Amino acid sequence: MIKTSSTLRRVLCTASLALPFASNAEAAPAAPAAKGSVGVAPSAEPPEPFEEEERRLEWRYRRADIWEYSATALVAGLYAAVEFGVPVKEEPGWTGGILFDDAARDTFRMKSRSGRIRASDWSDATTLANQVQVVLDGVLTPILSDDWNFDTAWQVSFINIQAMTLTGLFARAGHRFIGRQRPSVPECDKDPNYIEYCPVARNSGFPGGHTAAAFAAASLVCAHHGAFDWYGSELADSGTCVLGLGVATASSFLRLSTDRHYLSDNIVGMLLGGGIGYGLPQLLHYSHPLSIQSDDGLARGGLVPVVSDSTLGLEGIGYF
Image (cartoon, rainbow, N blue to C red; front, top):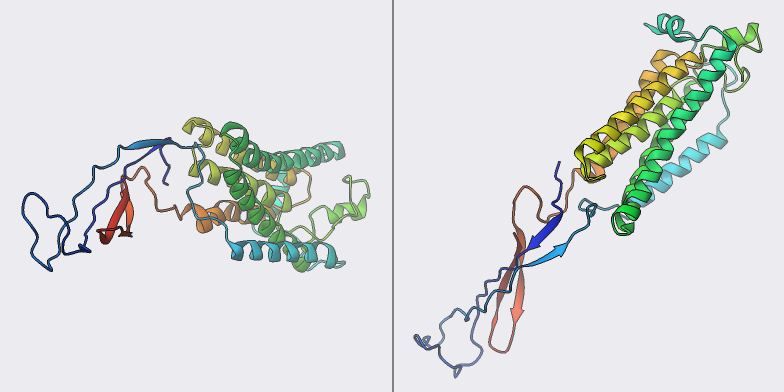
């Protein structure tokens, strides 16, 4: 992953190939050019190198374009349509656990109603904490710590919107169209007070929505902090990523403790949220650095036309 240096030294180097406009142009002292021949224009003194202070979080990756804005609006519209227009299945489309689900349920499920309620509250809090962190970090860090860098704040915030809406669409589509019965439903049928909200969304178990949201947010943080010196410290950036993933993992296990999901629900939720949260920014933006100097040491440049009273040619301009 390319990280730009804190100060970019730009050196302008030019080389011009010129054709004389007039035959009576003053000849160079060394030797006159033959009539009709192509000469080399006297080279001007190269300008002094200059330094331009660069923001720590300067945006140096592919920017969102009209197609991405349109696609994200479409995804958001589909998400809203599924959320509010497709009812929860009255009858389950899938019941019971698979593979290790029942063993994991026996291990992690809280045995008391009060314990399940506390686990539910904490799972809500940890999921929300990750989501709030990625939103505030994306907005406030560039603006407050990098000289009011609204450009990067917007680019990062839009990536967050892209990933979270796509994660929400896939998760909610699974709830509405697959309709897996939650593991708590048989217990709720026997005891309406088994958990705090027994009648709600009985057949919306797959995939784990809290887990998908928590891992999407944590993975977005990892993607942003890997692409930039976000806090100016590799240790702080890595620690923030690890902390977010730890909170997401805790949220996932807390959902098992509430008896609202099977382990397989949460594994799929983790892969869904983590894959989109980290993969989407890499695919669309962070794997496409802009063609300017970076720590790889490569020079970038191009040719521009030069026209003056006595010169017609090309000028090479480069960043080194």
